[in-house]
Picture 1 (cartoon, rainbow, N blue to C red):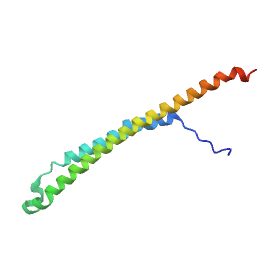
Picture 2 (spheres, rainbow, N blue to C red):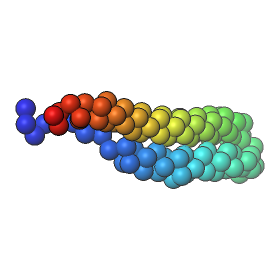
Picture 3 (cartoon, one colour):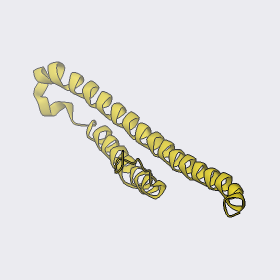
Picture 4 (cartoon, helix red, strand yellow):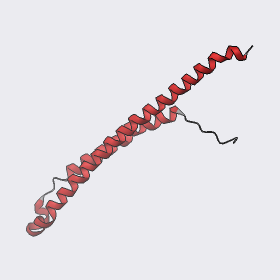
Length: 110
């Protein structure tokens, strides 16, 4: 059907990969560090009784959230790498197809 082509622009994949690598992954990694950093709060802030009930579960929850954010950051970095590889694969395929077509050009010009 005319007008329903599919096109991939490897340069856009490169830009997206770079954004993930240079902006998103570091921001999530910083958020993880901030969560871990805030986990050193003072137990006494809750008082004697509430420190027993709330402080320990709160610290455990913050540690889990911080660890999960580190995992997300690692996943974003991995996605960036896969996006780079996809851009390269599209470029390589385009180059290979052009090379194959170029071999037939002399025949077509006859």
